[in-house]
Image (cartoon, rainbow, N blue to C red):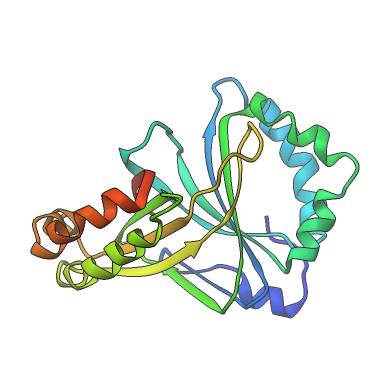
Length: 234
């Protein structure tokens, strides 16, 4: 889904090195993370949607950066096949796309192609570089924070970081307060999306057994209203 775009946006495009995915976004660019659950029998509807969306969006600098497939749904009542990454050059470009007179009609037809389509949108407040490696493992937690005690979730993550690193893990991205859209419209958005890279699939189990994790469980319980947790891979 790449397009002829200015050199600045070309530098932000994903590159593949021996199966890895990496991309760079500058301050002011817009990242979209899309988690789709396709509808059986909806292929035609999806193709019709793409046939309209891609030419319009790519003309404004929209790019596909890559994606991670969902390997295991740990905690969720939702069943996406992947977490896919896309970018816009800036929020104005995204707004121009949404202002297209035919866009609302195509947006409203999403349920014909997808059981659900969750879209998280974040404007970069600082430069971002992400790399996903085929010999690593990844988790993502989408957290809806408690309205009064949401800061406890940050305390929880800070408190377990040493245990995560000891278990071969690294926090690689934390996206705060994304805009959120689903087939049903714009329900309450999550407060944070957190990606962690792991050297092995045993990493999180090691963290769960740690003293730091046990000590911070009250912060997690009070700071999070609900959450989704997935293992991802290339």
